[in-house]
Figure 1 (cartoon, helix red, strand yellow):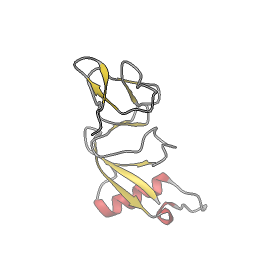
Figure 2: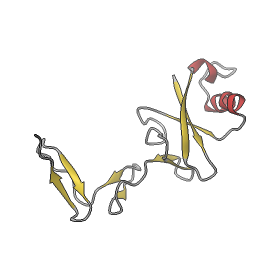
Figure 3: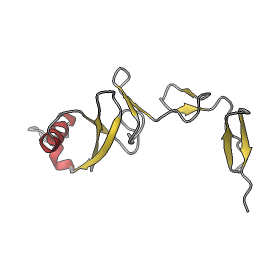
Figure 4: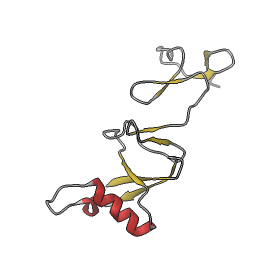
Length: 121
């Protein structure tokens, strides 16, 4: 199954739909994003669709509602989780300090710029 993201006038993803792979097959028997966009346009009346991929094989990240489509870099970008986080070269958000590698659970504390240990009950 293929997945297509609907993009609004601000390049924000408004929905993601599943399309049967058979709708993407072109005249030469190859899968074609253009054919998929055409199929989506026939259903919804516009061609503001971009293919996305669960495994991130295309466009870096699987699109979700609220994500931005960066057409210059051909990437889907999640909403920024915290003001201090920055976008890396793979269009994923990174905290100012790395997540601890001790197999414990932490939450980001934006005010203190720290990873706080989650106390499990």
